[in-house]
Amino acid sequence: MDPPPANEAGAVAGPRDYRNLALIGFMGSGKSTVGQAVAAQLHFEYVDSDRLIETAAGMTIQEVFTRFGESAFRDLEKRVVADLARRRDTVIATGGGLGANPEHLASLKTHALVVCLWASAEVVWERVHHHTHRPLLQVPDPLGRIRELLAQREPVYRQADVLINTGLRQFREVVQQVVIHFHLARAGEQGELRGI
Ligand code: S3P
Image 1 (tube, rainbow, N blue to C red):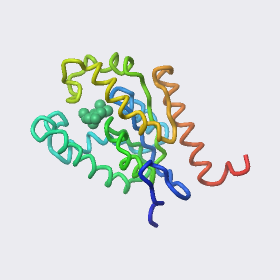
Image 2 (cartoon, helix red, strand yellow):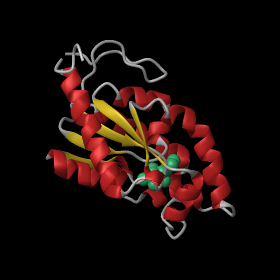
Image 3 (cartoon, helix red, strand yellow):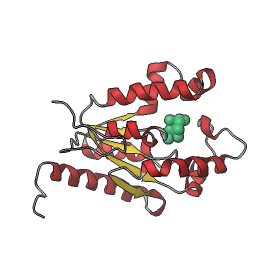
Image 4 (cartoon, rainbow, N blue to C red):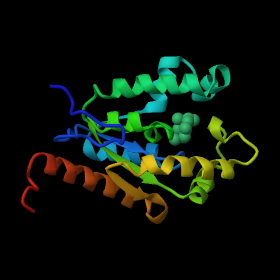
């Protein structure tokens, strides 16, 4: 069966298919750690779009950026997004830019409940400032860059099915919130919540 059509804003016409759960959000929002914990609770497979890109490219994300530039990385990201639609029972953690692309978000919505993990620029900076593997933050003013990118991306991140502010919650609570929203979405999909 063909997936329901998705429009540019990420809205999907007709009944949704929640066979997967996708986590989007900015760098440092906790997609990977939360995703692994959620996958363990749901007994789902866990994949990370950046790791899939690294496997396909045979090199790290940092190397892709350095050797071929950001646009080459975005091309690889596009291919991974298409492949993700073939998965089932999978928790998908996405790179920070993937879920900020309206077309990619629309694609994720054809097969997954999309949960955005939100964090303010200051919280993101606090979490990532000691990391060195994020090419987009290798600039003289990384906090300024985070603010700028976050502001640009926010309108698309907000199109997620569920938005969870991770700056206000403990890790365990974030995981619980994601799991609960997923169960509710699936129950609704099966009509169990009709009439409530
Ligand atoms: C990016 C975020 C990174 C990685 C790449 C680009 C972005 O993933 O995909 O460096 O555009 O925000 P994380 O969000 O896992 O750090």
